[in-house]
Amino acid sequence: MARQSTRYTCQTCGTVHTKWAGQCDQCGSWNSIVEEAAPETRPKGLSAGRGRAIDFVGLDQHTADPPRRLSGIAEFDRVCGGGMVPGSAILIGGDPGIGKSTLLLQVVCRMAADQSCAYISGEEAVEQVRMRAARLGLAGAGVQLASATSVRDIVASLDRADGPKVAVIDSIQTMYIDSLDSAPGTVAQVRSSASELIRVAKRRGICLFLVGHVTKDGAIAGPRVLEHMVDCVLHFEGERGHHFRILRGIKNRFGPTDEIGVFEMAEEGLLEVENPSELFLADRRGDVSGASVFAGLEGTRPVLVEIQALVAPSPLGTPRRAVVGWDNARLAMVLAVLEARCGVPIGPRDVYLNVAGGLRIAEPAADLAVAAALLSSLSGQPLPRETVVFGEIGLSAEIRAVSQMDTRLKEAVKLGFTSAIVPVRRGRQGRKSATVSGHDALQVSEMAHVEDLLPMFGDELWSGPKQ
Image (cartoon, rainbow, N blue to C red; front, side, top):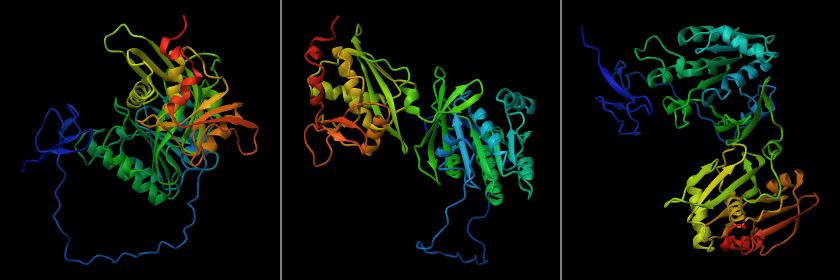
């Protein structure tokens, strides 16, 4: 009997090695290389038969917009690009216990009123899913439940004319194909299982939801090719100490990326938050130094959030820098600009920065709001309460314009803000007042350099806050 050949595969990145090693030389992960049975080799090259000619079409031909299936949850539909496209595969990742299963159970229960839906769990028994549905008040929804992990059985149940139109697989890491010798959750099993499920979903026009586990770094576990295979990748984020969750679109073939949906965790499940800015600013206090309101953009939606900073004397030889909700490298750059270009002695002090509410900000437009919060904390002088701030800071301390300034200002006016500190618009110089698209007058202070912020805080920047 011929000896079965094996190979060594990294479970993090999918790289194949000729022998076992403690560390993968491709991604740097430790103890991630596992021995697996090698697939049967196929003869190289093409057979002698001729292939079928491909039919080409022109770019100028009109294609109708794909139909959408609405879930009835506006925040979820927004992140998916206006609804789910039949035959699409959506991958949802998030930390354990963040609410992925709860959200998808609510989605399929809403959609079950108009079409057949199936919820297949590989981690929980049917009774556990029923208990969650009863707790959420969804026990009467016509959702078909099953507990299964065999992809062969699941495909046979979905690939029927009377099969469900919406299917949830919770989770893809628990699925397995019996023709592979590797264990569930390995690179080969995850890749092959997802490929078979996506194939039947596209053939039958099924909206397929795949739940994915995440690694300790926050990335979806399994091969990276899994994110390339699906049509939409969503990350469910949130701090356990906060009562709201954020659904963020990372990839979407049928809509915009970086769109977010905001939900509030309550006893009856996840509730939609129609105006996230009101939620993020609900606990905000006035006349407090070290706080500024940033007018940001998440996808197509303007969001106002409070940025808090604390600059304190450091007893350590190396001052501490602690950041929650923003980029550490970006904070280091803003601190260097304030000290080197503006002469603000902030280097020997501890700096703590927090985005209130647990929102994660990635856009550079928050630079000016962070600088304003730092200067306010250092001087002890609060910013005016009804003021929003946004703008990108360059290494020469210039303040650069950002995209969709009018959209940010309109959101500020809608929430009752009366003034704004923004970059100088192209072709304009100095401080000016502007009226924002038919709303009441909004005092807009346009600044070209970070030094323009210093007169707002007086001489206390050099002497420190008053005791």
